[in-house]
Image (cartoon, rainbow over all chains, first blue to last red):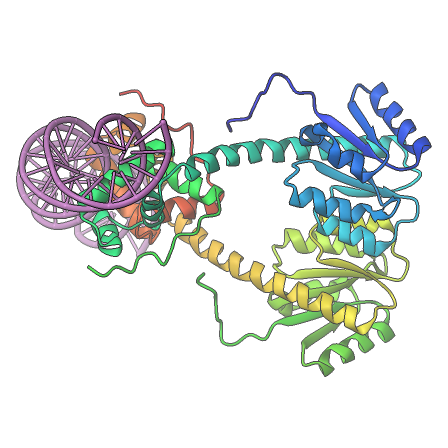
Length: 218
Length: 218
DNA sequence: GGGTGGCCCATACCCACGTATGGTGGCCAG
DNA sequence: CTGGCCACCATACGTGGGTATGGGCCACCC
């Protein structure tokens, strides 16, 4: 699956809690089990850290000063952070739990958290985070190749993955068939697609839906 | 998207609660808003009903006599019921909520449920349920065609979607190239795939991963 | 025993695909 | 203004894909 190995990155766990006692003790527990842990007292610290992009698991307190952990979670999502997120709280309620889970949290823990429970949650979050990270780096690589295509190549790709023949593509784009062939050959090379099947899967990965399809006009 | 229209099915909402008062009042509220509702006092009633397959939304009490609503939810999942599931409970706790959401519940409501909250949850569950139902019927249709293939056609399909040329497929399966072409033509017809691109997407839909790929042996 | 269906193969033909070679024109930046 | 990139097109050739025609072998079932 083309997983990325950027010089043996140890999976990173971020602990975000404004309560120093809770945060530090959590960090200590995890470090004793050989996890790579970084703590933050607030959301600003987390978002300001260059380590954020390496996080594979983020433990997030529901109450972080003025902000809600749910807001932070949303923000992590919009920043494309591919980490498994675990929320925890002393006064957690059901609506918060539902909101967190809907936004893709791995789990929601009630303080005080038993050590075994914590470990299980972290492990699960790490697994998800690493998997998401791998998937995302694959997708980014394909996306980069896709972005390197010229506008015309994009047009052709779109119709190619719709299953149209070169002749039909030429008709749609008001081109000669030979020109379509050239664009097609170029985009296959640029996308590094060994075959049409691979190209279709790449397009699926990028969420590119084929336009109209199968209706030709000579 | 090939959505199925089996004679104007009105989306069905199932209410499962052993408390008659709660169940009946919920039914009444929903019916007054023109939802199509059926109530059940226990899980046995639900699973025994022929209406279950038509359900697009299931409201499930967390406590159903001896059984947990979570068990029922699991069972619904293993029975391939494509409905949006909403759990609700008077004494809901966070672990239950997490478990429900992990299993794909739309939301988890605490009793007593405000009417607007209920409606919002039902609408969301219905939307999910109907979408899942449509997706599932599409997938089932493709699956049926896939199952109609002969073993040899399965072999060939597998290598076709891996992007191999007929010549390479013939080598792998120790066949003549012409035989591969025949199988290929037959499976394209049986799968009702207008093009290779569509075949690849069908295979993706069925979760068929291409074997090895791109390594030939002359 | 004859029918059905799966599996296999050959020749032959046509079309689709890919690419090489060679050329035109537009646009923009150095 | 020249070099580079994009877009466009033509002829030509080789290969890949699809299908028709015709045939052989085997297993299973009525």
